[in-house]
Amino acid sequence: MIKGGEFLIRETSASEIFIPEQFNEEQKMIVQQCRDFLAKEVYPILDELDSMKDPKLMPSLLDKAGALGLLGTSVPQEYGGFGMDFNTTMLVAEVIGGGHSVAVGLSAHTGIGTLPILYYGNASQKQKYIPKLATGEYKAAYCLTEPDSGSDANSGKTKATLTPDGKHYLINGQKMWITNGGFADIFVVFAKIDNDKNLSAFIVERAFGGITMNEEEKKMGIKGSSTRQIFFNDCKVPVENLLSERENGFKIAVNILNIGRIKLGIAAVGGSKATVSQAVKYAKDRKQFGVPIATFGAIKYKLAEMATRIFASESAHYRAGQNIDDAYNALVAGGMDSGKARLKALEEFAIECAILKVHGSEVLDYTVDEGVQIYGGMGFSAEGPMDRAYRDARINRIFEGTNEINRLLTLDMLLKRAMKGTLDLMTPAMAVQKDLMAIPDFGAEEDTATFAREKKVIRNLKKAGLMIAGSAVQKFMMKISDEQEVLMNLADMLIEIFVAESVILRVEKMMSLKGEAACAVEREMAMVYLHSATEKAASAGKQAIYSFADGDELRLMLLGLKRFTKIDPYNLKEARRKIANLVIEKGSYPF
Image (cartoon, rainbow, N blue to C red):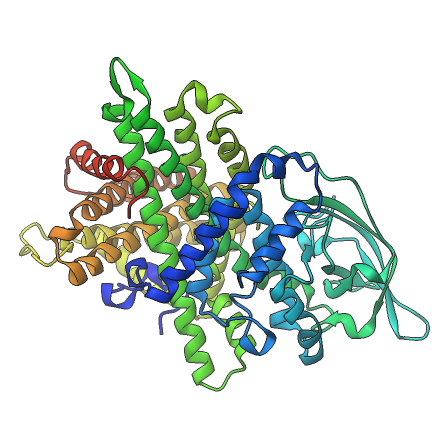
């Protein structure tokens, strides 16, 4: 089995990964159902939804989504759901990701609202709550963040105290930024029992009482989603509503956020596709100097770059999604309980989940920014669609752990696995050090296999990452966690390595299924992305080296970085024009 984080030290073959082109007819029908839901129920009322004049509008949309089965995709059939595999639930999240505030409300309900009960609840808790959450009869919210505890979630001050008769907990505290808070029936609430060091989690019904809230937050974007501060004042919760074990709340929060991160990333990919489709339609209609602006090279660059980044991010998301599914199936086959297996599989690939949350959200930010630019003055006007897209996108770099936190987590988890011995980073890192001292083999026979040169570039990028990470750990030892700038540089390298490898493998697999001629434009996207990833990795690597090396070590590492980030010249202008021409011809994101 492939391990989480192992992509850095293991060469993956194209046959091992899942690509979106492999989705079957049933999954494509689900995609169409989601698109129809957005087209019929959501897009016509976006302005009304954002106005927040009707507080019943969002819950009514969740009711309609529930009637279509969109709230129960990951819920097992025994609880009234469809029990779909992880990649299928990702597919639903992707398409709904184009639904602006509705995507936020729906994902908060189906993800962080429902899954803690599904994965950590006991049999009676699941039987009581999950079927009604799967249909939308109950709406869910997740109460973790507090005014003084955001990224440092375990420092929350909300308290739970056992009543003298031992039958209830009284919860007191304040939560903020609670999505769906205004209408949720069920709250997953995190609080510390007495003076515990770690959080515990509780299933709290609005009907229990002792719950008050502020007015809806006025937000920059996602205005149609309900976001409230919630106050618990002697909220009386039956002891049987303790979720999992005492002090297990922080672990629940971390594991559920792993799911939320990769789902947010793929939803951002869906939002990006919707944005580029709008942008290209406008570029074809808008004329300047007597011709559509889509004919201009500067606009083609933007369209091609948007499409390329989306395609690459999508490739990486479904690759990781299949890794999670494969790990889950292996654990179940080995006798593990289904719920525990799902959590274990997600925990295994927590590094990839963090990487993809960052990448997907930053692709969306790039796409909406360029979407505004393509629209020009109309992009800045609230009358055009880019106004909403631009504002709604910004929260994604903050949701589910900020991108800074996720970058730091990527390295933190990787290094901890190395120290525990679950990932052998030391052996390949030492091999790279020997490689640095060796004379390059300029006379090696050229490999003519598909993407052979490109795969060599990927292998070398991995060597660059291992070289810098190994040297940084040697330099700082246990204080490496204090060197956040270096860790962020290394995270940027890992992100680009994983995504670049994913897009190369996707196109290689496509070629094996469809033939090279049918994948000519996709090949260009793979080449464009690989060149961009190599440049970003070289820049991030150089910044990291400058941060801690000097003298001979500095010179040697810079020489090594230059060697490991070498890539053959390629006409990227022509490649982007081919990509853009297809996007323009199809009039939407076509891949």
